[in-house]
Length: 189
Image (cartoon, rainbow, N blue to C red; front, side, top):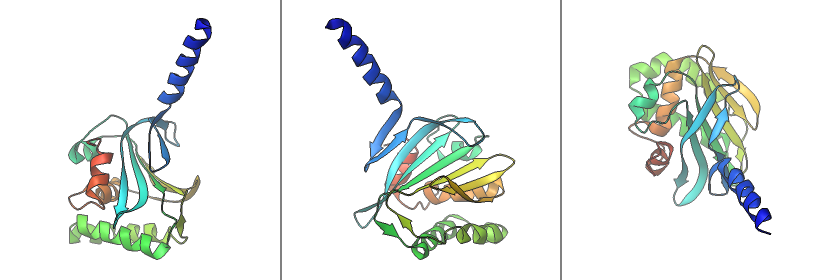
């Protein structure tokens, strides 16, 4: 009997290590690979709430853990943010309005003007409503750009490290979408 218990405990503990955690019913892996095969580790995860309603779980993956925005922006290599929708439905209009607010609050007017054509292309990727269970992946690969995928299907790629940084600042900037979400993604919570 004791011979069976130890292997069972080891198997269960290995299974638990594959997942970094669960938040609002979303399971988050502690290690992933980018579409290009680069390994990334979970930096942190948090919950986006609006008026006490759970909207989505945001998970930030980096080559190496960092808990300051400056460190994250300065890190070379790939970056990935997973956005798992937990609210029943978010219209495409509301998604675009939230993106717009995030870009405008965190970028000075001159940088916004430089990025505007790419930001407009980004908005055009959100033609469909988001529903509970949908996963958006925003994955920056140096030299390629930021790939935006919904449920595993690539919607488009927006070039430029400057765009990647502006997108990250929506979650991590001085005026984040949600302060608690920012803390979670920075691994401070």
